[in-house]
Length: 262
Image 1 (cartoon, one colour):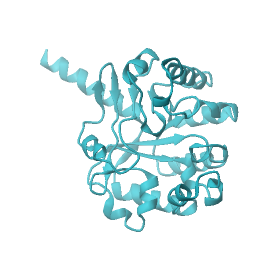
Image 2: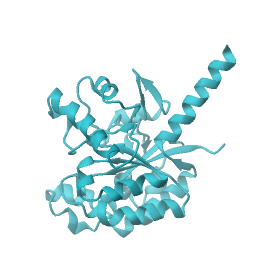
Image 3: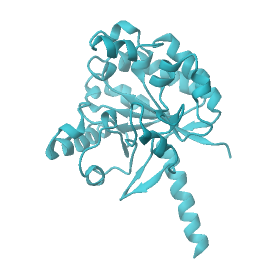
Image 4: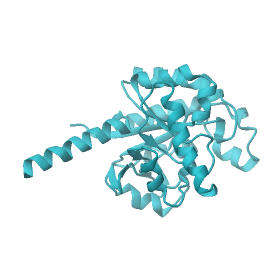
């Protein structure tokens, strides 16, 4: 059996701040990209985007998986308990109102709050993909060595894989930033890769960001990002699929193991 990697996509306001150009313009092309390569992905969607096009949410779920990225892309660790619960519950309800099944969650910027896993379970999620750091951190080195998925309380966790020296998260943002050294930084083994659809927007769409951050986040964006992603996926040489499928396979193996033991 070939190795499997969860291909995950954060679908949020452009550059995490405002605008829906990536949602409206990049989504159809990315869906064709997945279909041409016979890949599937999990889209972590900010549910406020349903106002822009509920039909697009349904299109995402035709061949792929839709999960929640919150209602508004606000940082959970800056919200009170009631607001956290709303971000988790209401986002799932809005997405499911578009006719899709939602089992997974990812916190914006991987910023988790107190009693995070308790709130996830109470909101009805089966799994999470928020463990990691979006910047250089030893946390990514540690998580890269964790099983994927693994059980955390009553929720299953998909930890972030690492690249480079094990400190950077395996994301298209960092693959773009490190190009042309991207190939050398790819890990020998990985379980999860993530990207944002605004990675494929032209640099001028990031004018809402402070200049230093804009320069960092827009390096090799737009059309160059497509080429970097294409080469990186080829180099990783795996079957790219959804978190939901990987969790289903994991639970089936666990069940079969218990049956054999008994």
